[in-house]
Image 1 (spheres, rainbow, N blue to C red):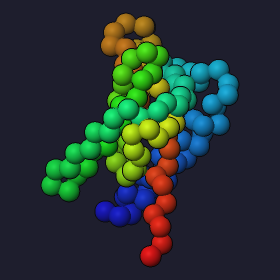
Image 2 (tube, rainbow, N blue to C red):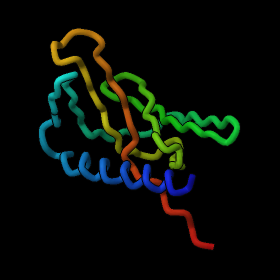
Image 3 (spheres, one colour):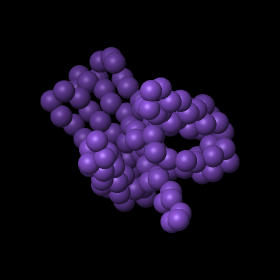
Length: 120
């Protein structure tokens, strides 16, 4: 279980690093046979934190204002510990079918790595 979490975290960091490198350039776009995907890297101040745990499974979502709208930015690993007032970096990911029909999806994913835990 810990090995799977470590692998997932390393993949997230690798993806996050690539996304952060694109921060100061035009939005990234990639086409495939099934759809078109693009993203931008954004920052915003946390207005609310939604945390839930069920039978050891956790979910962490940060509420921020993006383009004048309140949105939820998900921590895919649910290991971060940001608080109201903190500024976070996240990806706004857009996807639509190659023929530009519906559905058109928009997701927000946390890019900040978890804060290191203090050593005992």
